[in-house]
Each structure stands twice: as structure tokens, then as C-alpha cells.
Image 1 (tube, rainbow, N blue to C red):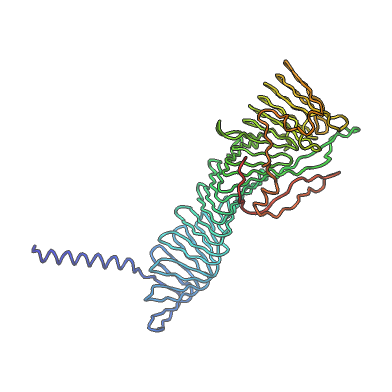
Image 2: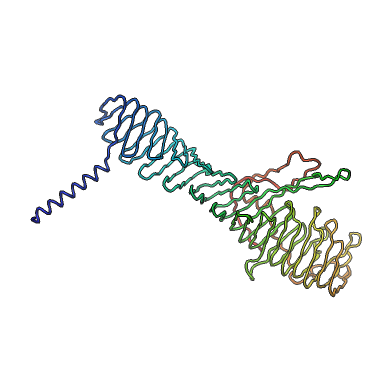
Length: 502
């Protein structure tokens, strides 16, 4: 065969291939019905098809009551009881359009998508049949077997089981609700990523977490929140008394406590232990209790909160309770019925208490470890172990009467009415008394090594004001005798400015 014939054959094959591709790209829709009529409008050939209308293009099939077919544009307007199907997918609306060249359907008259796995509804929607992608707008709602997602805008990737939602996003599951400005959700794995104004509400433990970035991995029972996270948990503490005649217990009062934790990073492990972790610039407030530290672990199932240093050079956790301040390398708080019953300060422990009337007078004690026991009235007793040094101010009928400096191997301090009532020293105790005329006006000269009064105690109002929350008091109903609500039930948005630990 000559070179000329070869070139002609190649050119012919090229045009044949080009024509075939063009024909595939220009696959025309086919519209049938009970009756049809034709007309010309501005040079455009238009067909009106009525009654049991069926439109087909490849594996796309649409039925409706009336179709207006624009032949040269390869489009059709669909009117009345519109049902579009493709494999397991069904889309329904009252009025829509189908664009054959782009193989997409569009409706501004309320649309429902059902692919046997999710049901998606909205005021308006577009579906791209070749990409298996839906773009729905306004009052969007996606429902599957385990959750309901609502938003202003949603893009749904059918093959990936992926939903990208924007604007007033809310996803509700059996025990958790997530709200955000935007969200990406994977149906099969339940993995969710959310951005900006994130709020996670849990009915299982009555908690709320705010932040600006969320990663939730339900199959791993793990959640990560960063960018200004703040945790809130509303607890009720019941105060009971026993009837002297019947011997039965009754509720005297309820105290509503809100646990507030703020940090730079939060993690939740929702397995059998149910651990919550906060890291970097952690601030905690719960009733009369407050803390600043580098790292906190909250074992919700065990009723235990652990705060500790993250390195040898890091700051010690600081704990405030009432008018007392504690520091140590790690501090563990034990809760029972949502009330603190034991506080364990481990290594390099230091406790000081400020007198409420004489503000320059601080009772002080240092040692290796300190255990503080609580009852309904506050601190009941304190046990101190390992190289004890202490300074305690004395009073005679509420008037100052000097101070005592002591040291021992261990000590026990008994409290009454939130004041030191008795101090017991064990193991080679030594003690020296300083009279009032040597102490008055010179109080801050009597301090132990490591004495620091931290002024950066976190306050509930400051943490919540960063959320721009409208506060309201939660008052329990049907409770006999007096009610003593202490904290608030918050509702609101994102946190802002951080406070660094001193």
C-alpha cells in the first residue's frame, strides 16, 4: 500500500473516531408519551409531550406528566410528578429540568433524593448523573439509619458516601449532636471533620464542647478538638440527711455545679474508661475549685481528674479551693456523687491558706505528698508526708497571737468550720513560737521556700464570657427544702482569648 493510501486511511480512521466520540458526547435524550405536538420558537424546534411521559438517556430514566423538549439544545423541562431514576437512585420533584449534554437534573421546586442508603431533601437541587454527585441548597436535610444532618448547602458524593455541608450545619446522632459552620461527614465510617463555631453536645454525660476544629472517629471512640476548645459538664450534687425517726435519707438540697475546662487541645476517648484529655494552657473551674496546669486527664467513669507537669522544666499544676492554694508535680482529684472527697498532691507539694480577715497571713505547709479529705462542709482533714515544714498563725478569740514554725516527718491537720482546729506532728517534730509583736507588719518575712501566691486563678465568669454566652440559672424542680444552685447552664458559641499560666 502506498504512503498516500496509508495517510488517507489514518485520516479516515481519525475522523471516524472523532465522529464516534462526538456522537457519544451528543447522545440525545428520547422523550415519549401519550401525545405530542411540535412548534418553532425563534428558530428552536420544541416538542410538547403529554401523558405518561418517559425521558431516557443511557441508564437515566425520568417520568413526569408533561415534558417540553428543546431538541437542538438536548434539554427538557419536566412538569408534574417528576421521578428520575438511575440504578438504585431515585429523585423526585414537582417541576424540574434535565440537561442532556451535561447529564444533570435540576429543580427549584423542592427535591428529594433516595439512593437506598440516605434520603436527601432541599428546596433546590442539582444532580450530576455521570459524577454521582448532588448539590442541594436551602433547608437541606440528609437522613440515614443512624443520623440526621441539616445545613444551608450540601454536596453529596454518592459513590464515596461523603457529605460536605456548609452553613448552620447540625448532625444529630443517638447520643451526640455536632454543630458547625462547615462539616465533612463520611457515612460508612461515621468520621466527621468540622470547622468554625463547633459545638458538640452529649446527652450521655450532659456535656458540651466548643471549639473551631473537630475530628471525630466513632469507630475508634476518639474525638479531637483544637483551636480554642472549651468543655462544659453540668452536674448535680445531692445533699442528704437521715430522718431520726424513720432512719431514711432525704434530699435537703441540690447544688448545680458546672465543670469548665479550657485549653488549646482536647481529646476524648469514649471506651470503657471514658477518658477526656486537655493539653496546653489548661484552665479548670468547678464550684469553689479551680486549676491551671499543662495537662489534665479526666476519667469520667472513675470520677477522677489528674493534672500534672508535662516535663521537668514545666510549671507545676496550681490548685485553688476556697481560700487555699496547692501546688505539686501532679494533683489527683477524686469525685464521688459529683463531689470532691479526696485531693492527692504528689511530689514537691505546697499548700497555703489565706486568712480571710488578715489578708497578709498565710498558713503554709510543704512536704513530699499531701492528701486532703473533704466532706459536705469542705476540708475535713489534711495529711502531709515527707520532710514537713509548716507555718501556722495563732489567734486568741479571733485576735492574732503570733505564729508557730514547725517541722516533722509527717503531719495531720484537723479542720472545723473551714479553719485549722488542730495540728498533729509525727516523727522528730520541732516547733518554735514567734510572738505577735515580732509578726505584726512583718508577715511576709515568715514564708517557706517555694512560697508564691498566684493571682491568676481562673474564674467561671471570665471563661464563659469568652464564649459570649447568655447565662441562665438552672433551678431543679420538685426538690424539698432549700435549693442552692451554684453554677449555670450555658448555651452559646466559640471561645476566644487564652490566659497563660503564670
